[in-house]
Image (cartoon, rainbow, N blue to C red; front, top):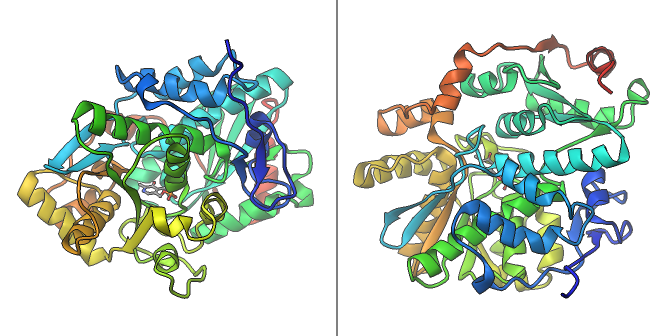
Length: 440
Ligand SMILES: *Cc1c(COP(=O)(O)O)cnc(C)c1O
């Protein structure tokens, strides 16, 4: 038998190179400030992949990435446990499909990455006997996915910082539900204040001795499982429906999701092309159009999980696809809030399908590209969140409120726990020490 595929991981900035996967996961950001990328990609034969179920397919794809690593004895159980939820592909019209990535515990696609990363990191810490405090600032989806994914993992405590009054009622309910090892802090301030606290903590004397780590989409462990639903979509469209390899449209913010799609393509998954659908935060569409593009301050929109002025994974995409290759593979455009609402309304009226505002940005992008004849043939839109996370926007667009899935409704009566705090780095450190003493 041939030995399994193995790759080292190198920083996009070229100094911190030659790391094993487990090291790259534990480090998060590379020491030179760059992001880790696999040095080589496995070559995955489409015909050899099972489509019996999402988990069966995931095991076939991930065996290429994980069976040659320190996770060789544990990865199957990890993938099986992390990703045991449905991933339906819903036809909206003859050639347009929505791949619903929101059937995990916290109703956004971030469950794929957070749940898998938590288990891989927990597995490694179990072997080294170390522990970690995961510190995250969140304005919504990331925080709840990380809280759910990392809760109860031995060796890991989670500290969540969210802006009081800056998240929706549904989102807050998901953040403060009492979970083992999870410590939410409601910060008097905006999301930027939370973000500043996280950045400051990493080299502040008050935090010395607290083994800090983070879990945002710079971590390579979040990107690996996000490849899986790209494979799932392409296999279902080609093998299942007998159509040509589709274009794939990704509602984008930090560009982590899109980067995972590019990983899948570079390891053998056929695709007609990618579309990065952005809201008014238009750095990437400008870049792809060859205009002057600079990172900018964040603009607030209805698709708030995509409100990112400086997408962190751009650095990965540029390194993966140098020169003109990026623009040959990826198209991109922007959708305004008015267009988002209008798309939600018209899709709902004509097909009965209720898309959340992020998915609507993706659908609008596809509709515009079709009109301009930039896009033909089958297309899959990645549906990144459940509409029930955005009841007010759904109401505004369509006049109806989506049904709450039971895992959201159940949270109404669930016990809650949080700490109110001023944005003060010393104060936060002493609270955190108190909370984690004994656990770490
Ligand atoms: C995080 C998020 C996005 C953006 O994903 P990136 O990987 O940051 O591009 C899109 N939609 C929803 C609902 C999200 O939570």
